Amino acid sequence: MKKVLLTTTALVMTAGVAAAEVSMSGKAQVSAGATGNDDMALETHLDLNLSMSMTADNGMTMSTAIGYDSGNMVDGDHYDGDETAGWGATTSAPSLTIGYEGYTITADSTGVADLYNGDKNSGNLGVAGSMGDVSFALTGNIGGDNTTVAGGSSYSLGYTMGDMTIAIVGSDSADGVINTDAMKATVTYKMGDTTITASSDDKDGVETVTAIGFSTVMDSITVAYTAKNTETAGSSVGDHWDASIAYSAGALTASFALDEADKSTLKAGYDLGGGADLFAVMVNGAAANGSEDFQAIGINFAF
Image (cartoon, rainbow, N blue to C red):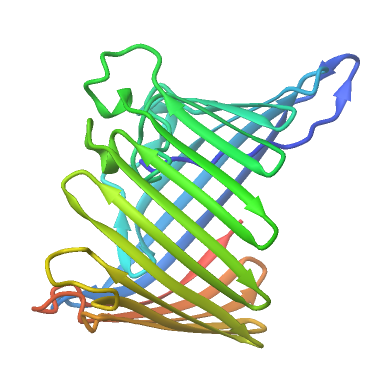
């Protein structure tokens, strides 16, 4: 079951009691696609979210949500499927987010998102906020013996100085593996329509990855390139790289990406208006035997 993103909404106060707001949103998708040598298959997907929020007299806010997620969907350049369908509240506890004067606390007994890898969880309590140009976030655990991912912790620290941004994230349960330390530092500098990024990613049991890249916007076209060094014996910056070009004009979007392994990804989308959009994606060379090649076309409906 996918995590449901929480939303906090300003509410109307009546007679000294916070008026709660309930909202519902969702997304449906139908697609036809195939991976590897499989025949073309039709897939459908529904993602339905119900959120509730309130504001107390002292300005404190609270929000929570549950969701229904079912079927297979095209997500990026692969299919993302849900093993079981049903309302999130029936299989896991909901997340609660409390906000006050720019600071937020997130509590989730099943785990909050790890700040190094947001697809994994670490701890069951998160705190975030900012002080001037410095932003911070922490995740930790209340209870437990710290021998599971739910007992892990992570952190992030960011600093903005003019056109330069410095960000550091780390975790002691990197990628969902407890007692695996990781830290990534990133420096970003913006010069007009061009952004330059340099980073170093160090994780236990994996070679440190250093990278430098840029992206630049020219009217409706965005070009990006990143060179990486895995710091293995004899390696150098440029042994691994990612390049992409994207186009956006009106309702049409299109992009093409290529890497050093000759994996290519071609995407296109067209906004039909009213919450509907067409999409197409084609991936080639994702594996030596072509087993991860992927093609799909479909339509999304947002409501």
